[in-house]
Structures are given as structure tokens and as C-alpha cells.
Image (cartoon, one colour):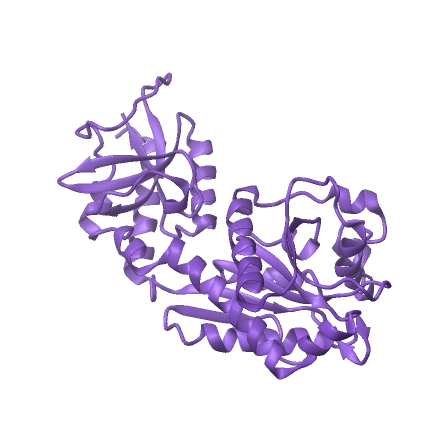
Length: 362
């Protein structure tokens, strides 16, 4: 019997998907990692008796308490007490849990005591007009860690060339990060009348290492006595926490809402095993390849027809659909190379489609 490695690989992928589908404990869980900045021997900035690590922790815990009211949200904290957490370990928590969002909460400060307002950072490709002082401040905790030169591969938070050299590990998450950051800033401004300094892109290590959409929130300036007093108060922390939690829930509803999730679940194990039989689908766009075979990544199957736009598929582009027996099967990408197909599969899983798998089109 002749061994067909290509078919073996595809069968293995389908079986792997089937097992993960059958044994998934909770497909509806939306996981958020909340990261209270600084802690322990790293106090962050301190002005007028207001300490960043304390305000960040209290506000973060309040955000978590609000989010936990949603039964479909799972909250994971990088710290819940005054302990020092190495910067590299913060995004690792989110990556290990395959979280949907990573949210880091901080407070700002400058030597000039006048500036005030909120701002939210995302890890971006643009480096023009970047605030190197903010980047150096948030990355400086690295210097408190043992063996930081080896751990961060020579990265020095005090050198602009190191900051400029940071690149995104997951560029496809940028738009989602910006959407969340914009929602957070809009909530601060529209609902609390806080001064908004906008959404900004910065080379921040804690965001660079996260595999999912991620933001770093600066609640305000502790160096501004009036704003620091507000952020240090229980009332101020409650108000800020609510706006952050509401923005996260709004993001969840838009990208992971009940209607959306229900529409993007495989209807049965039978449909999973049938997915390779694609010759009957009239809506497939064929491309030429030497072997007459193309590969796509199946994200999900549904009885509902969805518009093929990125916001309906967690930011993924190049979405197509095939139809069989009134079932819509949504596909990501298109290639004649099986290795490229595997890369697309990993991209889809990191975007949130944990059960995505490769299918073959003849």
C-alpha cells in the first residue's frame, strides 16, 4: 500500500481538531489577563504621596470584580498583592492561558507637574513622534531583574536604538488592540470627562511579547496633584475601573458575543469529518497550483451567513466561504503550500479560533 504523507497529515489535523472539539471544557470562555503595573521592589512613580504600584493594583482588582459578573469571562491576574513580577513573565501568563486580551494598568508622571489626562498605548509598527521617555519609564523595570541582559537579549531600556529595534510579534493583532484602546479612551472622555491624550503606539516590551490584542493604560498623572488625588481615591478608582471594564465587555460583545459565537461553532462532529470533501462546493474560488491542490484554514461552520469582513472574524482578513447542505463554512487564507497552510492555521488559532484546522481543495 502506497503511503500518502499529504493525506496522512490532513487526517491527523482533522482528528486533532475533532478531539479538541469533543473535549473542550468551555468554548464560550473569554479570557482576560489583567496586569497591575509594577509591584514589590518596583514602586513605579510616586508623587505627592501617591504611589503607582498601589493605585494600579487597586484599580486592576476593581476592573476584575466588574468583569467577573459576566459568567462567560475568565479573569487572570498577573499579581493580586504587592509583589514584584518580572516584566517578561507578565505577557507569558497571557500566552500560556491563550488569553483573548492582555490589559496592563499604570499611572503616568513627568517632572513638569502641570500635564494631566489619560492615554492608552498599543504596540505598533510606527515609530514616528514616539515618546521615548514613556517607553524608557515603563521598560525600566527590566533593570531590577537578575540576568536581565541575557533574558532580554541585550535590550537596554535606556538606549533609544533598543526601543526602536522592538518589533511586533503579532502584527495581526494591532487593529484589535487599537479598537480596544480607542473604546477605553472614549469611555474616559465621554463618561468621566477626563482629558484624553489619545491612543498611541510605543515600543513597550510588555505588549511586544503578548500573542493577543493588548493595551497598556495610563490612568493619569500622579505628578499632577489634582489628578493624583482623584486616582488615589476609592471613588476615582471605581469610576476608572468601570470605564475599562465596560470597554472590555463591549469588545467581547462585538467580537465574541453570544450571537457571534453561536454562528461560528461547528454544528457536529460529522461536519468536521466531512470538511475535506470540497469538490461539491460551487462557491470555492480555485487557484492554479502545480499539483492541482490548494489549502485553506477552516475557522468554523454555521447555519448563519455572515459578511466576510475582518470584524466578524476577530480581525482576520482574506476570508472566504463554502456552502454544503445549507451549512456555511468559513475559511481563512489560500495557498498551494502545506507549510504556509500550517502557518495560517497558527495565525487563526492565535487570533482566537482555537479549533481552526487545514482543509484541502482539489
